[in-house]
Each structure stands twice: as structure tokens, then as C-alpha cells.
Image (cartoon, rainbow, N blue to C red; front, side, top):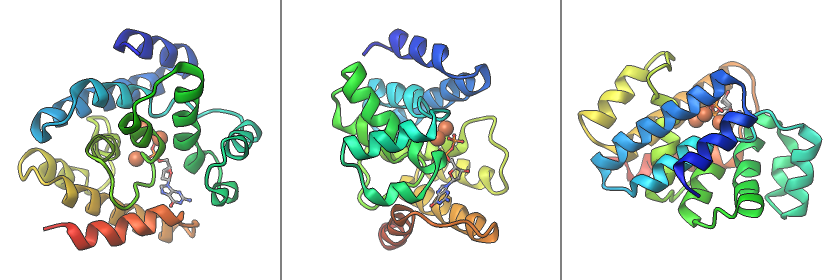
Length: 189
Ligand code: DGI
Ligand code: FE
Ligand code: FE
Ligand code: FE
């Protein structure tokens, strides 16, 4: 898929503000590709496409999980956890995006997981630090990325902040989030 086609399908599908967020994530991912020597095309495409299924109907999302034999634990969660896996499958099945790194980056952008590939880590982080994000601590993570240039530490700090936030709000934790935390706690320097 070309950048132009990716932008068009997302612009058509998502509300304007979500389309703009997607463009900011793609642009942030491009800057990160240069720092961390990643494939720029893959980073841009995964960034633009990552939230494609954000507002899909929940029943349809569960059908995708079942039809494509995704992790049945997903059935215990809603769109916030499902939209990445569902978008990844739709890009592969309906739009012929056949790149495994892009697939994993879209699929796991919300929770992360252990042993992420490079493009996957970049999208996970870019989604959290794109310029319009204002959550507490985001500036510290921008410094870890753009000054310290330590991608694994950024993944760790984001996952830690996500977990603290989710627990403070009495929310359930998806297994991949926990595995991501444990893995990057171990490998970070
Ligand atoms: O789609 P975005 O808004 O750009 O951001 P996202 O896909 O990273 O996050 C979507 C939501 O998912 C966000 O409010 C945090 C939440 N989330 C992340 N990990 C977990 C989670 N929610 C639950 N219940 N459990 C998790 O493990
Ligand atoms: Fe998302
Ligand atoms: Fe995220
Ligand atoms: Fe996003």
C-alpha cells in the first residue's frame, strides 16, 4: 500500500480529529525511524493505519476475533483493546497489507507485548508521545526517545504509566500489557 492510499482510507473511515492523530503518529514514527534505523515506509504506514478500527462496531470486532482465531481472551475486552488486533487483520485480509512488522505494529499498539520488533516498538511509543499528547510524564518520555535515544526504556516507562493509570481506575489488565512490563523491565538499561 502507498502512503496516499493509506491516508485516503483512514481519512474516509475516521472522524477528522482521529485522522489528524493518525497523521501525527505517522510523522512521529518517521522521526523515530531515523533515530533508530527503522524502515521509514513501514513506520509511516503503520502509524497512519494503527487506529483504523477504533470506532468499529463491537459485535463485528468479536466476529473478527472468532473468524481469524485471535486470542480468545480478547473477547473479555472492548474496543480499547480490540481495535489494534482488528485493524491489523482488516489491513491484511481486506487491503492486502502483507508485511509482518506492520501487522504486529498495528496489532499490538495499545498494549505492547514481550519481544516486540522495531517498527512495533516505534508505533507503541509514537502513539503515546505524538505532539498533541499531554498526559503527565509524557515530556520525560519524549526526552528518553529524542535525547537519550533509549527505545526499550521508553516502552518500559509507558507500560508502567499505563498500568498505574489502569489500576487507579479499577480497570482490567490485558495479559500482553503485563508481559510487556515484565519483559522491558528485564531488558531496559
Ligand atoms: O487509540 P488511542 O486512543 O490512540 O490509544 P491506545 O490504543 O494506545 O489506547 C486505548 C486505550 O486502551 C487507552 O485508554 C488505554 C487503554 N489500555 C491500554 N492497555 C490496557 C488498556 N485498557 C485495559 N482495560 N487494559 C489494558 O491492559
Ligand atoms: Fe489506538
Ligand atoms: Fe498507545
Ligand atoms: Fe492512536
